[in-house]
Length: 93
Image 1: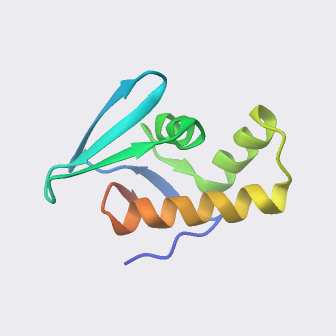
Image 2 (image 1 turned 60 degrees about the vertical axis):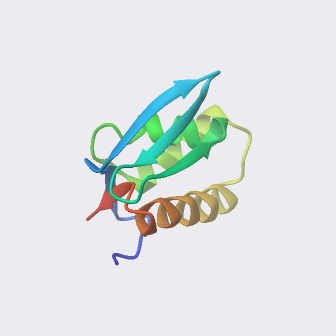
């Protein structure tokens, strides 16, 4: 498993399907047959992952969109992306 860092580039995995319901995203892992619901912040991140994007760029965008300190944002984003990677919903390089 790749460790997600601010220098990682991430994008959605091909092995998932997603849909938006009431401004939140619901994901399904095709391989695992498991569903995952994303809150509004994670849904915002998910939309950014449609194309490969640097984790640092995701953090910059979220800091502009939400009132959050840089260190808190970076920690939370890296942790969330690591969890998505472990569930094979995203790929990282």
